[in-house]
Image (cartoon, rainbow, N blue to C red; front, top):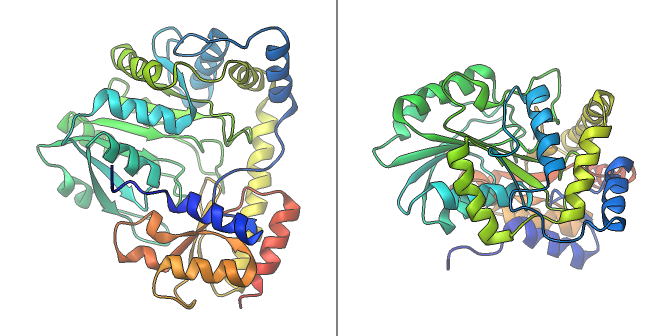
Length: 377
């Protein structure tokens, strides 16, 4: 545990607060919450839904998730036995790691990776194995993936759309991963929290829908990002019943249950919001992406334009400093805009080149951030 220090994401958020700057470090998503979501939570509080729920979530939410999974993801999930509502997608991932991994198990991740995935694996004494992807499109070869598999490999983590890369894995890439998982009898943990944030016509493909993958895929999602409720901590996992039972036991041990009235709020949002909401979400965030990437380009900080999610990795190697942290602090000191140093997402020196910015901001804050960043040119 001595190696699990405070994440750079939170460290930069704290530095930003001290500098009274604009926080584009943490994915707090401070955009408005849809009215049906707030109204559903308020009504739940007023009508007495303020006590413990079942360990795997209230029936209304599990049923709403099952319908959504069938309609959007193409996943058939029994809401009584295969869905576990947890304390955010991060909580769902941690429960899955506790339930299904043993100390010494090797788990393959794609780099750049989400730091909390690595921390969760280390906390259960699993061994992360990194597969570096190539900027700016974050490509990888199947041969390199195959070479990472050993007799100790137990699982592969796929984050699509990805944080911090914004990569959306293609069906062909996912099929290659699936073939490998079936051949070597591996789990695949898929973090799909950004499933609705897709740009330029890209589709979202859930690994569990590929042949032979339903029984070995742990699909993890949530509404923290989609509904701008990152502080509510409502996520979920989907797995076949025998795995879900184990994951649920860990969820009960760690969290007892997710916050009761907030579960009802999310269920209300899923039921009330139609496809026009999700189309609007994509269009709104595409404009935010394009606006911020133009500012980075003008500032001489070339972005790896994201295909999905709401983060962008920018090449800051021209800025003063020998590390990403030094360059991130230079940007904060010069512009009062906080980003995350690349070391948080890379295992080697490649991370020194990059900073991650989150563009899930109100239009006013984003315009101000762009103006400040453009001043670095």
